[in-house]
Image (tube, rainbow, N blue to C red; front, side, top):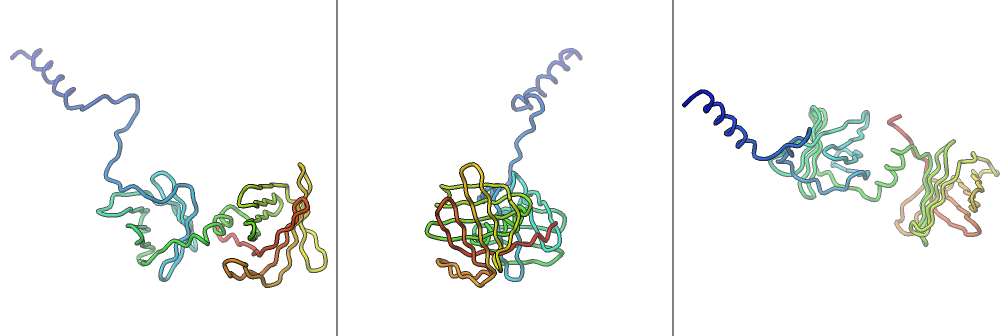
Amino acid sequence: MGSRHFLLLLVMLLAGCGGGTVRGNEAPAVTGYSPDPRPLAKTLVYECLDYEFIARLGPGEMAVWLDDRYVILSQVRSASGVKYQEGETVFWMKGDEAMLTLDGQRYTGCQLAPARAPWEDARRRGVDFRAVGNEPGWYLEIQRERQLLFVADYGMLRVMLDNPGEQFDDATRVYHAVAEGNDLRVEIVDEPCVDSMKGESFPSQVLVYHNGRTYWGCGRALEHPWE
């Protein structure tokens, strides 16, 4: 066989091994990763036997807020379950079973705490004070020097106004904003309060007045340990 024919045959064999057409800069799909059933872009709170932490999922990665630092873990292959890792920090889960390895210490029995998630999500977003109430369900978020967010009627009513600053009426802290057809007044008294449905205790009683309606509930200040 001549060299010209040999080269032609070699090119044909290599083309046949390609298995398809690659367009532009597309990379072949990575396989071998178990799908993560948890929702993306949602704050998750895990309570382990001797530890707790906050997580948030993105495509192929998991952000973890620890006591003293913030770490982004990448999804890696696992013989079973779903696994994320960055250095010696490893998160693994399979079904309802989850485990975190941190600085050589393994924390087992990690379970989701969904009731805490809205509070930790607010804290992560820089909310300074949060309150909740029932019948109908509502919540309030206050960010100093930024805004007041009031969501009521199980999400049907949503009011966001510039924070006018805190005022005092004796022992009552007051926020009062009027704009765009909304008259929103918030009164906070630092007296013990118990959620009427869940029985959870809070350090502050909260009254919200919006366009003639009154909402009663409980709240607490939020710290930001990652600043």
